[in-house]
Length: 420
Image (spheres, rainbow, N blue to C red):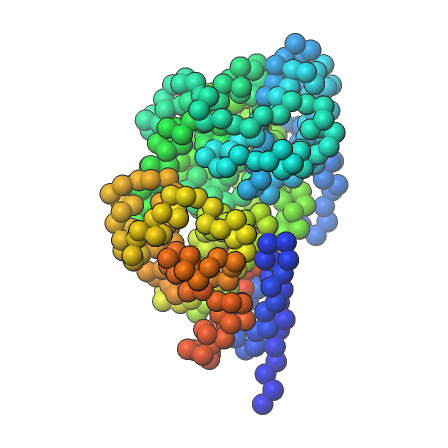
């Protein structure tokens, strides 16, 4: 009997990985509800800037003497900064702002420094030529207060030494803060190591609780917004992008109210109701979502609601830059089992170690496979079963259960299945 196969291409870094799955085993391809018709990206941004949420327009806030900092995402984020900055700058120029009074700040948090070439590519040629840009330096932060959660607010001095703080970013789901974007550009974006570690340490207390993905009432989001308020974040411009990395929505204005409006767009597009299947094959959506395992684990977490307990998850993530965090690497080497990692995390918070605990928690519930450029040893120590290809992983699953129903999530970095 001939088996009908469906061919599916999954993003893998900047290339694709091919999968041929028997149609009888394909439960569904879980895709976001992306708008079919969309305005030009520049027009969407312009409209957002002309109609800010709970705020005056930037052109009404600035004057020719205003010192302005614009916080932008780093290379690990898919934010199309080079498309967002020109309309934003036009709005500032309308109010008389001058290039020499503007500083663009890359929000690195505790990520690595970028190369000069990476910085210029993110900003675009014209902007990087005409406007000063700096990278966040977590050793040059000033203590300005504390949140009600006990998180010290220590912010990069180049940001604080300005009259107006603006941030731009992409709205997406976040495992801990509910959503990215908004005040997250301040904490952890341009905060000291002490602030970032304190902020993340709260997660160990919430680790065993209900998932925080896609929840605007996440305690971490409240902590972020208190810190952003203390720092004086005045205005945000957040965009929502589709699977082709095109801007499909933009919201500007007050860093809390505009953020909530953007979260509504994300929910309507990327929360998808599903019945759990026996297995899920999830691609992060390619570069930069799968630049390293540290980033790729977000797609793994997003996939969890779509699979039955005891089922299998196949993570398709290139991981060209390896694990992506030295502490995460260290925990993977030192924790001999998922239980080790979970116990260690409960008793001792260490930034980077949280990723080991997240994967460990999933590994106790599901069989985890990974298709990546990581070595077999790295994959196994991270609690995954390495597979040479997506096809090989699928064949292993079907060998154990020929009738297995499989969901495919091509854009796991964005899509959040929600159980029906």
